[in-house]
Length: 282
Image 1 (cartoon, rainbow, N blue to C red):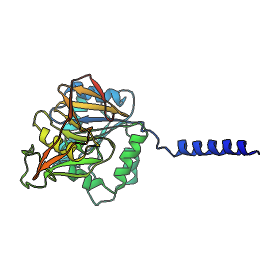
Image 2 (image 1 turned 90 degrees about the vertical axis):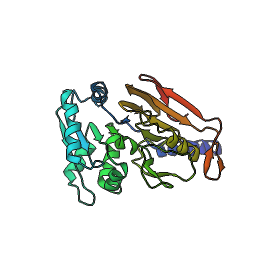
Image 3 (image 1 turned 45 degrees about the horizontal axis):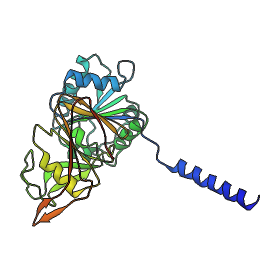
Image 4 (image 1 turned 30 degrees about the horizontal axis):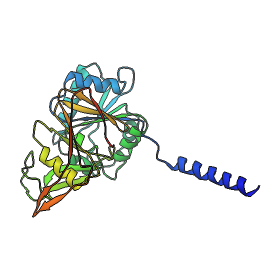
């Protein structure tokens, strides 16, 4: 083999290695609901995306809720009312072993639906367990992963907990835009390139999301209103439901500070209406 042929072969091997080492694109979809009432229109779109009228089943994970049994009953009732009956609820308490049969069922579900409640409670239950891995495997295999309210917050890698570090008393919305105030924890990481906030317009949560993007300028902030969802396929999102989705971006990495008060310039805000689409990372 002469020198040129050797170099050409080496380049082909390197290119092949790079292609094989790239992470495989996810095959599934995310259906992230901002909380509030889930209308029949919203649930029917979710049923269609998961192809549940043809085959498959739903698993409801209610561990974010203080009343998980009620969360399963309420969530299942919405799907049953819209013609889908292959539904099971898995309340999987923290610290208890999970039967392999349930893990297998999770991995093969057409739809995994995460209820509302407390996102920290949900993540503490599943982090480091086969449940976490099974949700990711289901998504990689083409399942739809859906969640509402707290079940929406857990979708991102960097998860807003709802707590303020400077003000221990809980409020539904932040009253300040201040440094080192917003609390994050680890979410499921199914949505790696954005931060999710929910009940957004109804509860006026713009201060919280503005704080998030000023202190994390590499991540767009997506605020989803009640009775509204985003359907995420790859890097594209579609607004589904009745209200708006706001996307905040800090493309110029702007951050000013006076004492603990945060400032920024040239932030970008888009307000999307039902049926409109946008790129999450651009």
